[in-house]
Image (cartoon, rainbow, N blue to C red; front, side, top):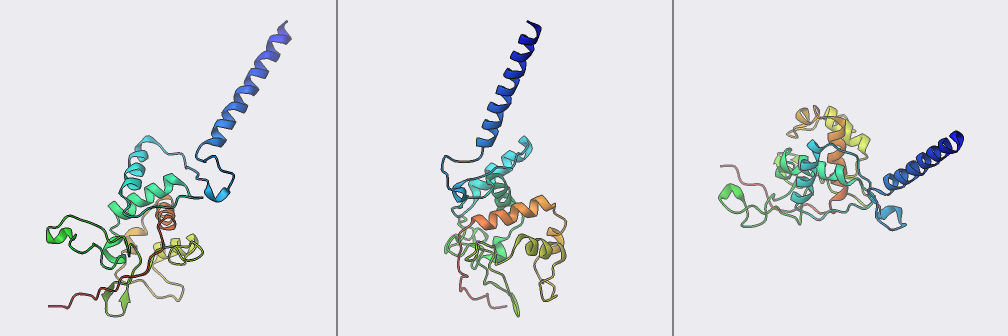
Length: 201
């Protein structure tokens, strides 16, 4: 009898583990068999969930989450759109016509050229297109290249990025920079705007 009860407990324990494992395996994915259509989600604490939710809600462009981690993309959107001010230099012009908050107008981000670069920031310095290329790489960069640029400010030719506040971004955690990269993977490809820089006074 003792062995019978122990056998029941072991069987119940194995059943629970199987069910829990099945639930865990199912979290963060949809019902399709297409691996490119599935999302994953990095587990986060309650302290990060609010930023993730706000980040997903505030993205000015529609995001393609297929095959991406929804939580990382949301956190990346929060950093890009609420903290790092990437739009100010990497979208030309940053705001839609008649929607510049610096002129007392209701803010509307220029979604047609969002983060596509093309803004002249100084003589011979034009902001980079950060949108995904044909291979889905933001600005044509792998994460390793992106991380190295954020950490060192150096391009592959050894030149140092000017104006870009990489010394500030270099202090960010790897996980935060990964989130920024994942957000850039999720935004649509766009071409640079053609608005000329303002004439100096």
